[in-house]
Amino acid sequence: MSAQDRTRWDAVYTDRDAVPTPALPAVFHDHEDLFPHTGAALEIACGSGAAAVWLARRGLDVQGVDVSTVAIDRARALAEQAGVTARFEAVDLDDGLPPGDPVDLLLCHKFRDARLDGQIIERLAPGGLLAICVLSEVGAAPGRFRATSGELRTAFSTLDEAAAGEGDGEAWLLARRR
Ligand SMILES: C[S@@+](CC[C@H](N)C(=O)[O-])C[C@H]1O[C@@H](n2cnc3c(N)ncnc32)[C@H](O)[C@@H]1O
Image (tube, rainbow, N blue to C red; front, top):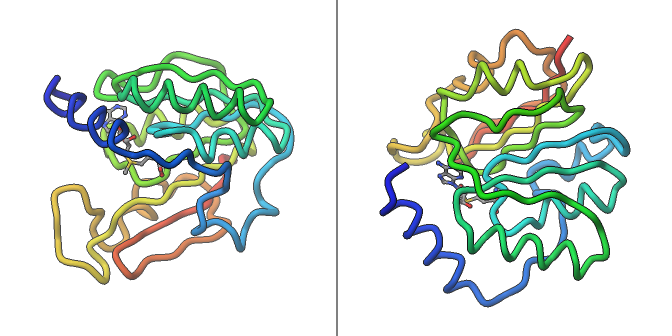
């Protein structure tokens, strides 16, 4: 990521006044029961921490990473406000996933970098759940950051699919490592 991109994301979060409410992303609401209550979770591109703090409240040991230091500061403040412990770190995913032990849940919501697919699979513990939602070309005009039709299923075909969907410009997948 260029310094310019980082600056752009910092500006996005600086301009956002509203403090987010801890929440599971809406796209996963119908499948909340698949999300673990214990164990380790990693959220990549966590933004200002709404999902990560929700996971910490649920009982998971959460690490959230994002390139924007403004977002990370907000995520830390949100965790403190919610009275939960979660680790938030500024990480540029262009350099790959941060090192760490296998996780029981890896969450990625509205961020796509296909170069990370192999590392994402490798980071999951046996039985660990991948929850990923990205922008899609299906139901929207093609764009640089949009997944092509079937892209997530193909990228994570070595995982056991639990649920998936594609349409209205969004694609998502819930899948477990064997
Ligand atoms: C559309 S936002 C989604 C944020 C959050 N997951 C959510 O759903 O609200 C995309 C996020 O990706 C982060 N991001 C973009 N490029 C990144 C990179 N190279 N490394 C880490 N985070 C990055 C941005 O800072 C931003 O928080």
